[in-house]
Length: 127
Image 1: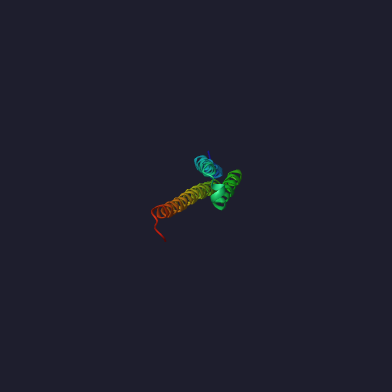
Image 2: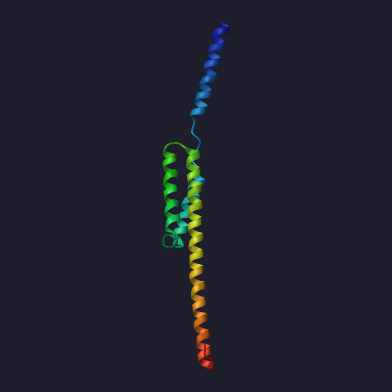
């Protein structure tokens, strides 16, 4: 066989393999998407919609962006959005916990103040 034809055939094969290799899309970031969905569900369960609505809304928006990126076969971008969604949802849950703890703390302070006043009244002390 002609060496030039062999070289041409080999070159075309190499180019074909390279093009096929570049054309494959990496798999969807399923674990990242599931982690984001779970974090949003956890935030909803602790009532983040009431205490950290902005962060929870941002988490949902970023998850929708991740789903759109998967549809567009932009898997790296989808993973990034999913990770950001998870972080936003976790922040919403943390802010919710903090708000609830602050409310309990304020209630305890008020109750303690009421008890102190009651004790003063009972003992005959004046302010």
